[in-house]
Structures are given as structure tokens and as C-alpha cells.
Image (cartoon, rainbow over all chains, first blue to last red; front, top):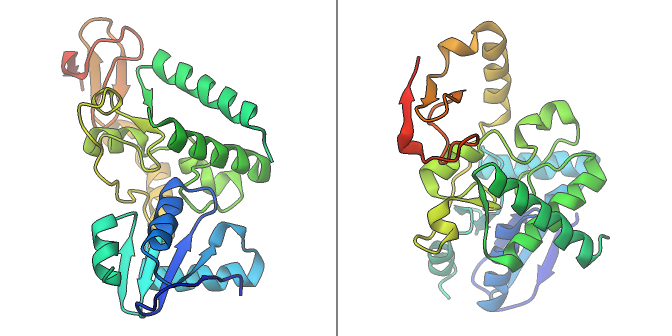
Length: 93
Length: 164
């Protein structure tokens, strides 16, 4: 799996589904990094074949519109789009 | 990988074309540069400039609605002051008079897109959209709202009237 991990303070399992070309995805990734939160991210547009299908289905499960960025925290809380306040609140940072 | 000059040239051309048609690109240069980089990356890998903030299928037929400028730009400009990726913004946002709201994804999910495609084939456009007329130059357009600025004579949206 092409998931990259950014080390940081543990605020639960934070996963960022992103596109490598998207400005809002970049801002979301930067925000998580600035907050010092440990998180994993994957650039879905850079995946191919079965791996891509699998990750697409995973994103669709949390966000049926399949839009990016999608942040999933502890397999429970989902934040779609660069919503800074919501992200800050959800990771408690 | 494209050079900075290539990116800046493409961004400048986009901005000029936008202004000529009554549209505006995002004045945040660094942010816009990032989006243009994304457009060019998509041009390179797909052969067309699909939206940098949407997952492209990689075949033109399925991605037609998200080739920049996308089908959703104008309604998003009207409702939120910016398009989905925020490459395009309204005159007020460009001038710094207002900040754009975050734009939720308007593009329907895949199953809904397939249904709409069949509907488009079955129902003529005249029954799906109102027609607006520019009272100054007579320009007609069939869409939910008139454009912010008439692309022909450049008067503002409030100079349009419902024609059909």
C-alpha cells in the first residue's frame, strides 16, 4: 500500500486521502504537519490498477462523492474538504 | 517535470483568456501556480487539463465534465465566489472585497452521472435550462443563471433578462 506516514503526536489514527495535484489537499497536509499530528496520507491519483480500485472503494465508503481531500479519524470521523476549524477540533490540536 | 517559466506562462495565458471572457483567476499567485502545475501534470498524463482537485478517470469521455473550465465552474462562482479548485474567482473575490466560501463538490457521484447522461440524451436542452438575454447586446445563453459578466459586451449580470 502506498500510504506514507508522517510521524507526530498521536491523536488517533488520522488518514488523509489526497490528490498530488490539488491545492486544498496540499493545504490540508500542511495543516496536519504544522499541528504536529502523526498521520498517514495517500495520493490516490498516483495509484494504478487493483490498488487504486481498492483505495477508491475505501474513500467512497467514507465519502460517496469521492472528493478530495478526505480526512478520516479513528475510522469514525470524516472531514471532506479543507475545513481548517473542523480538522483542528477533530485532532484536538 | 515542467519548468517554473512554463508554469508562469500558462498561468498568464489563462488569466488573459479569463479576463477577455469576463472571468477572473485567483489573485493568490502562489496558490494559482500550484493549480496550474496540477493542470499541466494532468495534461501530461491524460492529454487534457482535467481539474487538479478531482480524481480523473483518465479517459476523456468520462472526464469531459471536469476538463478545465469544468461544467461546474459557473454555478460554483455564483454560489460560492470561486470554482471548486479556486482557480477561478468572482470579481469581488479578485478585488479582495470578499473571501470565497469553501466549495462543496457539485459533481454528482459516478452512478448519478451515468443517469444524467442518459437523461441528457433523452430530454432536449430547451426543457432543462432557462434562456437569458443580455439587454445590451442581445447575447443569449441557456443556463441556470446568467454569467457574472456578459462575455460579449462585458456588462454585469443584472443587465440580463429571462428570454425563454
